[in-house]
Amino acid sequence: MKIVVSARNGTRDFECDPGEKILHAGLRSGVELPYECATGTCGTCKARLVGGRAESEWPDAPGGRSLQSAAELLTCQSVARDDCTLALGTALKSRAPSAPTPRALGGVVRARRALTHDVVALQLDVDGPLDFDAGQFALVTVPGIAGARAYSMVNFDRGAERLSFVLKLKPGGAVSNWLFGDGVEGTRLGLFAPLGHATFHPDVRKHVLCIAGGSGIAGMMSILSLACREGHFGAWDGHVFFGVRTARDGFFLDELEAFRAQYPARLSVTVALSDEDVPASLPAAYPGFAFARGFVHAVAGERMKGRFADVRAYVAGPPPMVDASLRLLLREARLPPADIRYDKFS
Amino acid sequence: MGPYDRHVFVCTGGETCPTQGETENYVKILRAGVQNAGRSSDVRINKSGCFSQCGHGPMIVVYPDDVWYAGVRESDLDEILTSHIIGGNPVERLRYDPGKPGPNKIVGEKKGAEGRAPASDVGRAGPAWKRVCRSDEVPANGMKAFPVDGVDVLIVHTGEAFVAYQALCPHEAVALEQGVHDGSVLTCLEHMWQFDVRTGAPIGDAETGLTGYRLKEERGELYVALEG
Picture 1 (cartoon, rainbow over the protein chains, first blue to last red):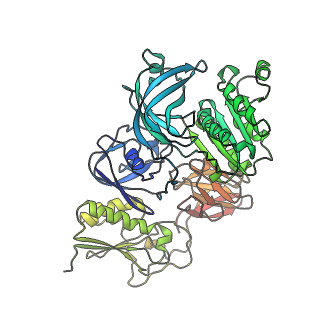
Picture 2: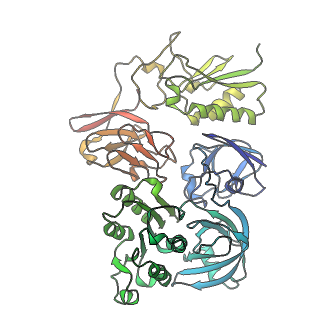
């Protein structure tokens, strides 16, 4: 089926397969349709159906609150039933030539490892080598479970054949139940990747500030992995703020210490505990880190005071934490939006 | 009879229509709709210069029906397209009736994209002021949204003065109140669209500005004019 998209700066068309999400068809064809979460939550991908038939596979998606008429749809949840003409309220951006084109592929679960009582690491062997930028995510579908979930890649490799993710368990959640069941290893999952604009490139000549809450640290690990490999912290500062509730919710601390130890003069790691005072065991185990009690955005705001010049900030975590961090970065730090990259997951 | 059943003119070249709506985009949307309806051979959509009705825009004229539309918003295009251009039934609620022949410009009164200004209001002595709130309900350097006659209005205290805008971001209909401003730039937290606090003009990535309302302060109370 042919999809024609008229945006404010021109008209593009692409082919869409039966059952394929319109957003995916556009992106894999090089048409940079707008999106942010790609999972029906944020509403960024809305478009107006001017002609043809299309249907949402998730009519109650929370992102639907931004739709203003029955003719509007979320391209990330909609499939075409016919040739369609869509109108976008915004302009189509052009993708950076170096940015990898996303595609649908499959992957097999090879390892599952508990990181904390409710966070699990998953490794996936993918069908073919996948290029992605540090900080990007993948849409993952589990057989028998409706809808896709977005997970950031933890690792960074060109032509990666193995992807690492972290999953936060939600009591009663369909994916969580599956993850706790038998036969997870060896399960074949569906992927659409890579996606996301909160990316780091070594040619960014700026200090790097990472503010992460909980499993939001995943994408930061990918960014730190690339930045360390490229020697970025030889010339620029890195500030990592990692917020969790209590000491037992912390993970990847050994991995963060390994990054820090490579650039002790310029790379700092601060762990913020929101729900308890810092137990003495933590600084004893990680003498190179700083620890503080408080919300991670507040801790970052306090410790970064006067040090926001030439900073590129990355933010990921639960929506309230991301919003609070964005307020800090815009109002106190006065960073331009181009230097604030974020993922909100809910 | 000319070569087209219907011939539609959208003002994209006048002084005010293109500032009151994205009329170039209106043309694209209408053309896509006509094409999709399979009517490209008998319906023609043309860009047009000024109709000399400045201030009533964005304007669209449909011949041979001689139906004029004023204050057309992007959200109205579907109805105009389906009902009138394709279906032959003019959209009465959007029809323009200047009440007198010839040029009919409203000069110098409007800024930005206030939208529809019914012709019957043109000669009125002054705007209808609606009370919004007490001045002290919006702290210095703060902002807050209030419902006024069914319209949500955002009052921004720039530190020096009050200004009034549409309460929702034009991008994704997100409440601007949740965003931040520093007295000169207002940023919507959802996708980082930014606007000049004093004028509502778009900055950076933002593609459209904010609709502003005239505001006055009297005896510690704020009033806005929703139209005109």
